[in-house]
Each structure stands twice: as C-alpha cells, then as structure tokens.
Length: 194
Length: 142
Image 1: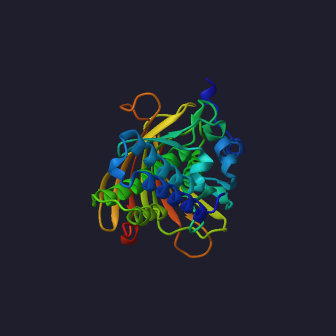
Image 2 (image 1 turned 90 degrees about the horizontal axis):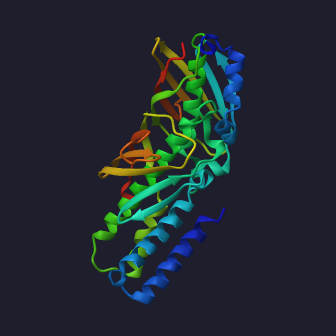
C-alpha cells in the first residue's frame, strides 16, 4: 500500500501542474475536465483498501459515477447457481454510495465559487480524505447476482448538516432492471465540508 | 425428488466454510445449530475501509453478518433446499477496534414456511455495545 500522505502529495502535485498550465479550471476543455476529475477520483478511491481488494473501478460522466465490480470466482456465495455472495453485493453498494457521496460533497463545495485558485482547490480536495461514516444500510436483494460484471449508480437524496441519505442500485445488463437496491444513511461532519 | 432430502447440519457447516467468498475474507464458523450461528473474522489490512483509522470496511461486517444469518437459517429446522437473503438491514453502532477479531452471532427468531426472520450482532470484544447489528428476512428452506 502506498502511504496516504504520498497519494495526497501526488494529487496536489498533479493539480499544481494542471493549474500552472491552464491557470483556471474553466479554461480546461470538457474532455480535459473529465479526465482531470477522473484522476482526482481515482486517487481518492485507491486510498480505500477494501475497494482495491474487490477490484472496483468506475466511470465518471458529468457529476455521475458508475462503479464496476468485476466478477471473480472468489465472490461466489452460492456455488449451485452460481450466485454472488450477498456480502459482496452489500459491500459494492456501500462503496458506491460512499464514493458518490464524497464526490457530491466535493463538487458542491467546488461549485460554490467561480474563481478557482490552486490553494482553494488544494484545500477542497482535502475533503476527499475524510470519508463519510455509515450509520445504516438496508439492502433489498431482488435477484441472484450472476457470475458476470456488475455496475452500480448511487443517488444522493440529501446532504444535511450532519446526515446524508443515499440510494444505490446495482445491475448487470439493464440499468432499469437492478438485481439489488440499497438505501443508506451517513454521518457527514462539518469538518468534511471544511 | 433430491430437494426433499433434509440436509444434515454437518453439511451446512461444510457448505458455509467452503463458500468462495467466505474463504476469501477468512470467515470461520465456530458454532452452529438450533437456528443459531457464531462466526469469526480475523482482522486484515486489505479489508480496511478508512486507512486513516484502520477500521474495517462496513462491507466486511455486512458479509460477516449476512453469512452468519444464512448459516443460522439453515439450522432452524430440517432444510430441504438452500436459502437466500430477501433483505438485510445493518446498523453500524461504532467503529470496530483495529487489529481485533470480530465475532458475529445470529439467532432466528421467527421461522415460517416461506420466510425466516433473523437478528444478528457483531462484537469486537472491547465493550458491551455491539459494533453492528443486523435484521434480516431470508427465504425459508423448510
């Protein structure tokens, strides 16, 4: 594992380079902005060991993140079908919710100001170092998860002063036909929002 | 029909111990029978959710509780088929102490022909309050 401090330094160095080149985030072209966001996001997700253990990846379009869970034979919970273990599904849903929530808090903060400075963005990216704490998680298992790749998308229902509510769904072929749903609450402290 | 033959509890134990994902996380079934199950999880750095605190990821606790509940369901009677989780609610009461073994205990408190209702809690042995509790409904194997 790369020490977290090191990851943060790399991220900050990266931000510095980008900003020295462009001066202002608004001058970045759309695809550059997406790439830039994805790199911040990757640095953030890589610091969660269990996320790496499961091999979760993601795509980021606009503010919306789609997470991917590869199929691995270690994830089987019922060899007869074979079906994914309920715990893998629950973990995947929870990680997807945490990533989307952290990201939404970061973007919310970022959108509050029009003028970006390196110092401000440095400060804001620190938000991603503080993970929301799960209060509860309710999982609805609709169908067995088959032995193929799964995807998930989370919807942040509300970010309050202390609590946040997030809904997540996971599917394999059709996003409109999820095989599991979850609803979760998180503790978001004021320091998270800086 | 093959489905009609009851599954002995030894076989249930073997089934849960040999599940690929249980092996992956290193879950161990320590007690099983009469609709009760006790499962153990050893601390591992690759299962951490927040590197700042070294606390295990919630998903790991979810897996432990889900597995433990499933095992308890299979011994609440003479199972004729396997079970599946219908829904599971986890309440995270406090962070688990890093570097400690987590023990989960599940009890079936209502068994019907269609649904089995289960409660479970996870302890890290440091305080009386559990790390997390779970309430679940499972398809009935009876």
